[in-house]
Length: 394
Ligand code: PMP
Image (cartoon, rainbow, N blue to C red; front, side, top):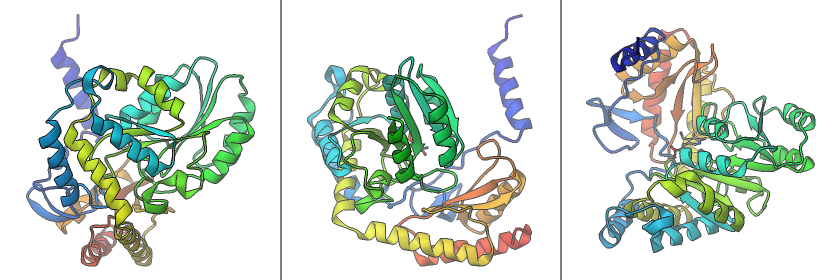
């Protein structure tokens, strides 16, 4: 008998519920700021990707409003038909200059950027080598690619070299890595990755969703941090939704890369261009980070303070090097319980368990931002001390 829709939905949802994976997203009653209201409760927010506090910043909102009034609510079409407004091109030029690349192309999200670029660039006979902890959007992007796909052990340079050695091809070779890993907060060893990739004639592809606005001068990102920003054999992609506070994705690199993506990248070709208000806010974000270094200074001051104090309390922060600060609890249920107890103490921080992270490594992922005050972080640390002791973690 044919499966009915309700049978399918019930079966799937029951499966999720039985394995403890059914998601009920918490709801913010106010803008996403360092202190906000979640499900009716005032909290210190350690769950956002709003690294620089730009999501609700007046400068972004003002320029968004100006672009909304002048250019309209929507772009009106896909970029290749009638949706490319002057402000799209101007922003891409601004972004390319910021990234020190020949060009940049903006897509609807970081997720679709990985699908668009990987799906376009890689052909039959090519080789792509991907870090095992790369983001889901890279994994999905690679599903669209016809190349031979190989995975190397996380941040293991010997394994990367082994895979390149064992899988030679005359086609294009691409080494793909996150710039900053989203669950552990460690920085890719780009200096060594690019050197090894070059030894085998491979191009390096860096998804810098969590490095842009966080690392490098004025937040130019992980590739700048390692000095490869002018290199034509390093492709930078990323999101405009985390440190930049809004939404969108980008690919920055050689001018010909942009040209090819305009012609072939399916999310670019078949999905409507970004609305003017988004472009305005993003343009203001890039201006702000370059004119005022205090955002990044506060981000890193807060990061150093929070990490050091968690360590002093006796928590394992899993070698994180960036504002992404995991706190290890081990079992999934312990991490989820810790998150619930922290919430009762007025701290919003999300628990992550298997299969999002490996078994036995369930954690709470905290993201420190420039907007947090010392008082916010001290409140969070006091709550962590209490919850960690109650659960026997410290
Ligand atoms: N790449 C990485 C490494 C990410 O962490 C994310 C964010 N979840 C994305 C891509 C997707 O970005 P976006 O939210 O803009 O789709």
